[in-house]
Every structure is written in structure tokens, then in C-alpha cells.
Length: 331
Image (cartoon, rainbow, N blue to C red; front, side, top):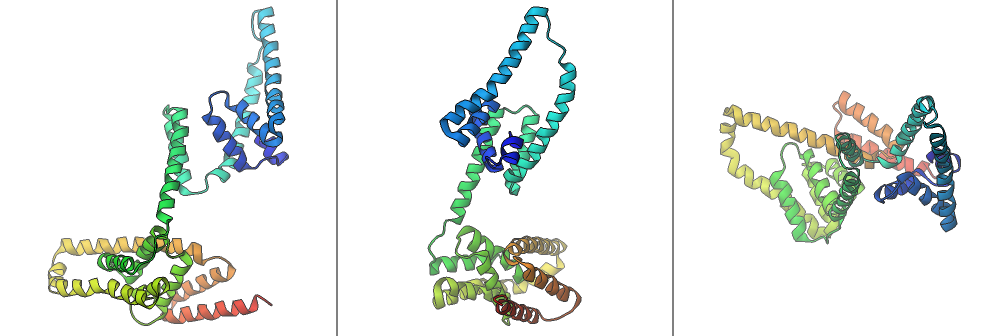
């Protein structure tokens, strides 16, 4: 069906074929016949449904009728083993090619791939087809609902800003750059107050200015709630540091003398690096959007690795390149 209706005639797309196949799988009755009926209906309405069904069923019924006549007349079925021996591997190849091709349209993210693997594993151990089908539907629907809840944009308030930045300031470990992971989780994923592009802009602002990278909070606060937001965000993110240093300063010498505590701190550093790596990959999707951005990334990375040039100079060079590009493109 895919070969004839998707590839040769372009009557439906792979995505449409998959949707119809899913519906057919959920309905009682012969799946292949139901898929043929669906395709006929999509192509030509009610008449198409009847014609497709008749064309799909009648030849098979006639051939089976001939075999039944031979069985009754001669007491046995004609030799079909040799035919099946040659046909089955060809059919397997056709099915395999269809599965691979349709997978490109269906398995579009990691969750879908994991779900497919889970279904394959469960089916291999005798899992019920209907349970797996409906289970897959429930799993995807639940994920979509969860994502919708996460991305529901809440109203921006000074109290909410203070709460987020107090939390980040209180739980931030390692380099200030780990801040990026927390910012993306709270402001992009959970509240939807910022886009990845806006978060990148805030990070650039914090990096391009002297002082701690956590001044990114000032930029975000101003973007979301004006001058008052900038003040509240700045105070909130730095306040826990003042409190923690005042309380923990005398304990630092004891921590360094303890092998267990020192090892624990090392573990926090490793975890921080992992968070940095993950958020870097996520932000790359928003930053590396064309040839210029990819080239700038490669050059900046090379300079960062091979030289000791200040990051502010690299950012300034990137800004100049971006401005020059915007002036040249209209030409």
C-alpha cells in the first residue's frame, strides 16, 4: 500500500498512512482490509471506500475459492510451499523497507524511539497487541499533556521572580555558568517566560559585562518586569551567597581536611560539568541556525582552546560579524 499510494501515486503522505494504520489497528476486524477501506475513503469518499474494499477483498476471495475447489475435487491443496518459499522473503524485504521509511515520519524524537523499543520488547515477550497499542497512545497523550502544562505561561510577578532567583542562588553549585541550566529549566521550560533566543541574549549580556556571570539575572529581571524586576532579581540571586559565605566561612578549613567532604565537592563539580554540557547542546539548537553562526562558533571555539584571549573580545568580534552580516545580506 505504501509503494502504490505513497511513493508511486502520492495520494497520501507517510504521516497520513501511519495515522490511518494506527486507527485500523485500534479497530476490531482485519487490519489490512480496514486500512484499504480508510485509504479508499480518503481518496474518493464513500464510493472510494466501497470500491477499495471490493477490489481488496474480491481477488483474494476468488483465489481462495479456487483452492477450496481443488481441495474438494482432488482431496488436497495444490503445492504452494515452493511459491511461498520465494514470495515470503520478498514480502519481508518490502515490509522491512516500509518500516524503515515510515519510521522516519513516526520516530521524530527520543521519546518516540524509546516507546517503539519498549513496544518491540514487550511484543517479543508476548505482550498483548491491543494493550500495547492503547498503552502507546496513552503514553504519548500523557507526555503531550505534561508538556502543555510545563509550557503554560504564568503571569510574571516580582514575587515569582524573587522566588525563582532566591532558589537558584541558594542551590547553585560550581561555576556561575551552571546557572544556565537552572535558568533554562525555570524560564524556558517551566514558565515559558523566555525563549531560548532570549535566554542566549541574557547570557551574552552577563558575559559581555565585567563581574559575575550571575548578573544575567539583572538582564532577565529587566526584560520581564522593568527596573523593579532587575533590582529584585539581582538582590534575590546574590543574597543567598552573602548568607552562605558568612555562615560557612569558618567551616571551610574543616571541609578541606575531610577526605569524604572533599570527594563530595569533587562530585558536585563533575555533576556541574554534566549540566553545562546538556544545556550547551540545548542552546546550540537556538544559536547555530545558519552558516555564519556555525563558522563563528567554530572560530570562537578554536580561539578559546588555543589562546588565552578574553571572552569579551570574542563576544565583541561576534557582535561585529553579526552587524556586518546584517548590513551585507540586503545587498
